[in-house]
Every structure is written in C-alpha cells, then in structure tokens.
Amino acid sequence: VDVFDAKADYVRRGLCKGHAGAVCGVDWSANGGWMQSWCDSGELRYWCMTSLRPGPTPTSVQEFKHHSKPYTLGKEEWATVTCPLAWGALGAWREEEEGEGAAVYRGPPLEGGGKGWVAASGSLGEVKVYSYPATQVGGGADHHTSVGHAYMPSGMVYDKEVQHLVTAGAQDLAVMQWKVRV
Image (cartoon, rainbow, N blue to C red; front, top):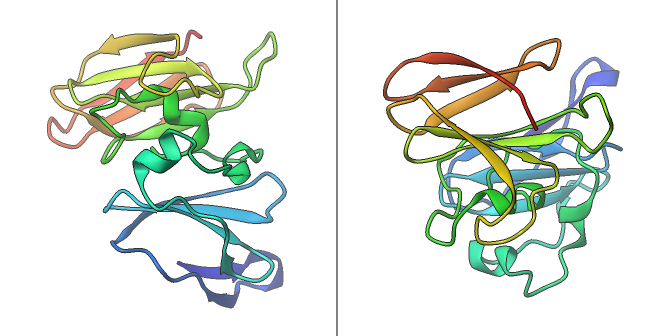
C-alpha cells in the first residue's frame, strides 16, 4: 500500500508491504495513527502510520475471530470500516463464512446516539445491518436482514443524509437502495 501525505501536496511517504495477496481495501483509525488493510487471501494487517511498519497482526482469520491473542488495535476507534475481517464486523459472519469476498460498510451514528451501524453482504444476496460494533463471533449478533440481490453484493455506501444504504451486485449488476433501520 503506497502512503501519501495529503497535507503536504500528496508527497509519497512510503510503502506498507507484506500482504500475501492483492490488497482489497484499507481503513483508517479516527486519529490517523493506524491503518488496517486486507487482501484477497483473507489476511488482515495493521500498520503504524508514524513508522509505516506493521503493528500486531493475527496470523489467521480464525485466530483473530476467536481472540486468541489480545489485538487491541481492533478495538481502536476507526474512522472507516470496510474490511470484512475488522473487529467491529466479526459478528456479521457465521463460522463457515469468514467474511472473505464480502462487502462491509460502517455508517455514522444515527439520531438517538450509539456508535453507528455496520452493514454486511451475505452469500445469498442479503444485506445485514447491525449496531456497531457487531462483535459476537459466529454470526450471532442482533441484526436486520433484507434480501434482493441474486448473489453477494460487492460494494456498499450510505447516502449523504445517512438514511439509505446503496448496494451494488457484482454478478447481477443491480444497484439497490435500502432504508436504514437499526
């Protein structure tokens, strides 16, 4: 992952290198001190933005999901959450799913408080919306499910007013708009 400094006219700061596969996405901590990235081989990595060096990283999806080591960075306040393997989205996946290849999106807090919501796509074309963080491992977190796509939606984003979630299907090529209710 190439890292650029937006405040310094986009000067390249360095490279965060070490994933086993192609990088699919990145998320930033709220304070900008950390980045989490994930790749198509199901690997999650944390990066310190001061040193551009790796932080404590799980060695497998199962290790991270079952919290066999104390990965406190997962509980960092994240400005964005798009990584299917992120700590705040772990409750979206049943044991057999592991979240690989799925879309995840964290929305901001809604009226009435809370830390926001996280939406996740399912392999049967469903869109699942959870209160954030959804950390109950094994897919047991409370959520609302809607089905509309023919297969797993591959991307999602909320609208400007944070009242709707827009999803895109990779195989059915459909774009759908969902009313957000958490």
